[in-house]
Image (cartoon, rainbow, N blue to C red; front, side):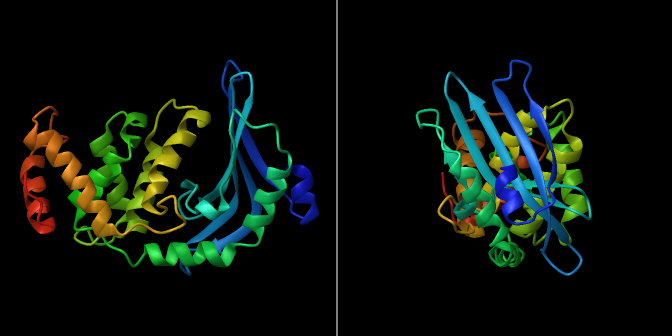
Length: 251
């Protein structure tokens, strides 16, 4: 990776987190390159590298970034800029060169993705909260609902119209600032999970109506139809019924 960065004249900086058994590694590399979600929201761009070892190495290279205004970490929101070697593959050192080259050449694509995300809205704050909980990042938080609501209070301008970008930022804020005693090599998975708000896995931004409808449908089955889950908050059932009506979901 160092040689790949040198070829582009990059002055890189970063940090590495390794598990006690050395079976997991997570590294954040800052390229010293800026992109902008908007004029007042500069983002430092780089690479997020994850490695796992089970007798064979697995490696992942993704977009890694940090928002300057709040130091929120971000990762993996553009599948075309994802490079991976599975445990079954022979070691491929060329992946590092591919990853560095792709991200150095892609600021305009990244800015376009972030601009699109600011124009796509979920139904309301309750739906945004359910979408965040559905990603599974609650397991990294001591008090998931209060933590996510606090994060949304800081990131969402209009609770009645939270955008995908704002909801994503709420998730990354919670992971960056409210997770406690979670090592970076574990937290990296949380950043991957919340990145589904900006990436379908097919190099596309999700449709917020489809994302919200799927989340509400899944949660309504758990909480209302099957009754095998506890409410996340007082009044969640009522909120779900209202969202079901908006999405024309019946159980």
